[in-house]
Image 1 (cartoon, rainbow, N blue to C red):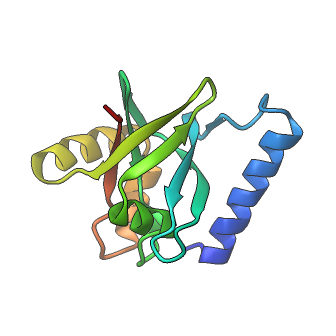
Image 2 (image 1 turned 135 degrees about the vertical axis):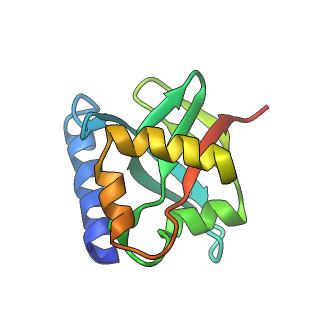
Length: 142
């Protein structure tokens, strides 16, 4: 399982590639669209951004997975959006305010099944940890 340092380093490298290519490279990874999620730090109150893949989209709704590579702890960005679900999402074509919510019950099962059948890496991450990996739905802010 990747450490928090490895995950941060991978994120920094990804962001550097996007900046160096002026956005021509980096908007897809593992056959999934990439987005930049900006949350408000739950402790610092500062804006925090991370690059994430999005394995599922439906119209304006976007799903992201708080897998952290199968680590036993939730990623910091997930803890931030739990504390404040108002986020900003930048995709290849635009940036917009969105509201995050962790899906549960039948909705989570349906999305998790659909996502993990297509992107099997997520099922592998779930096998590495005892925590239920959260599925988060990002929806446009009204």
